[in-house]
Image (tube, rainbow, N blue to C red; front, side, top):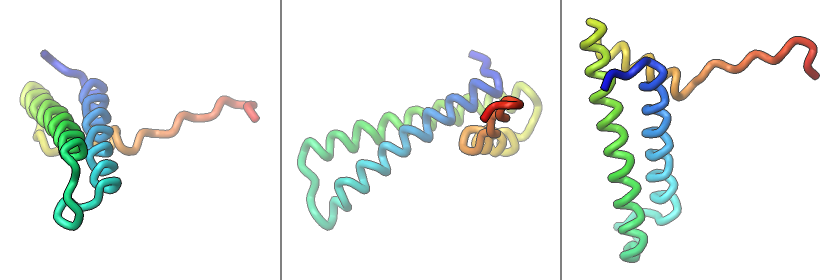
Amino acid sequence: MAHTFDDLVEMQKAADEAHGRVRELKDTYGRPTSQPWSPEQTEAYEKAWQAWWKLADEVQAAVTKHAGDEGKPSYDLETAVRAKARHPEPVPAEAGAA
């Protein structure tokens, strides 16, 4: 499936959100080496990690394909996608709005 630049940005946002969930769980549970996690915590973390990894893999493959289709370096496209996903331009305020 061909993806547009905006599709890639949305895919990156989803991967970033999933990674945020992994970090959140790790922050909540602490390090498993300092205090063992319960089976439920381990399962929740593993599911979150796998979901993030899947999304990250999908966006990487889509970026690589898109860059190849466009004849551009994938690194440049990946950098642009991540920048747009993580630092979107602010929406200008309407003139006269208070």
